[in-house]
Structure formats: structure tokens, C-alpha cells
Image 1 (tube, rainbow, N blue to C red):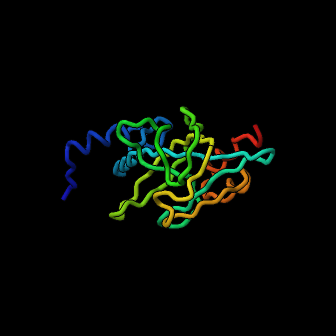
Image 2 (image 1 turned 30 degrees about the horizontal axis):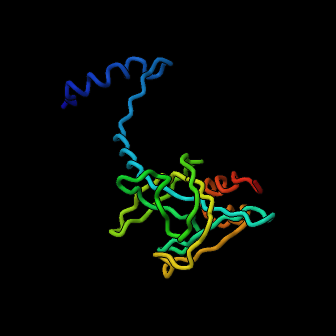
Image 3 (image 1 turned 60 degrees about the horizontal axis):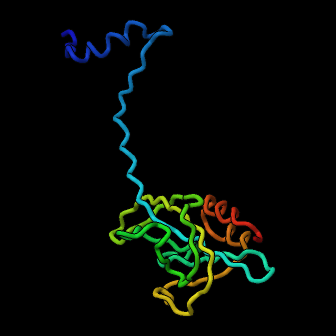
Length: 170
């Protein structure tokens, strides 16, 4: 019994069959289209730094609550607040730049177990003072490190590069 082809399939194959072995062969992908990458969620981060006297620049790192890795203070956008106005987890007060100095991405596991990709905009914060107590003190450790040490300590290569952009002394 001869094989019967559907007319639509013949129409799709005909141009490809015509030049199948020649250089003008048209490639038709039969694989399903890739799933669209999930949209990135935006977060804002402060890159707190200080200089005491003639000592070199120090950067404040905090631990994440879930994994305990060293990061810079960051958070979700606050309705009605500019990114540079957001206050962070570390209990520091100072002058924050209006412009982001860079961004990095990471995967965040939400409470329900879902993983989302976050794009974090980084704003430099020149620290004037640090409160002894702050909202998340029992959940996080804080540590002042040199720029070089802080850049090595954070797990993200791009964030490390952003940290190194701070001047040694100003």
C-alpha cells in the first residue's frame, strides 16, 4: 500500500527536498520552540563604604538569612520610594548616590520554593554612622572588609568587580 502524506506536510517538505543535497537547501527545525526565559525581578542594593582617617576604603558586607553567604545589603523596590532612598538591612546611615554604579544578577529562592532571577541595581552609600541595633541584627552578621577582601568574599564575580570600582582613598 503506498504511503499517503498529508498535503500540509508535502507543502512544508517540498522546498527542502528540492535542494536537499545542494548548497541552497533550506533548514527547517522540527524541535519545539524554546520556553521564554522568565522575566527578571528588580532589586536595589547599597554598597556601603567608609574611610577612617588615612586608612583605605572599607566595604560593609552582610550575610544572607537563608544561606549565610556574604552579600551587600539589598531589597525589593518600595512603592513610592526612589531606589536610592531605600534603607537596607545593615543599620547604616549615610549619603547614597542617585545613580546606580552597576548591576548583577542572581537566582533567588522564594518562600514557596520558586526560583526567580533578580537583576540587582547597585548604589554607592557613603556611611556616616552605623546603628548598634537594627531590624535584622539577630538574623545577619555584618563585617567591614577592605575592598579587595570584600570583592573576594562575595560569591558573585560581577559584584566583586563592582566593589573593586570604589576608589582606594578619596
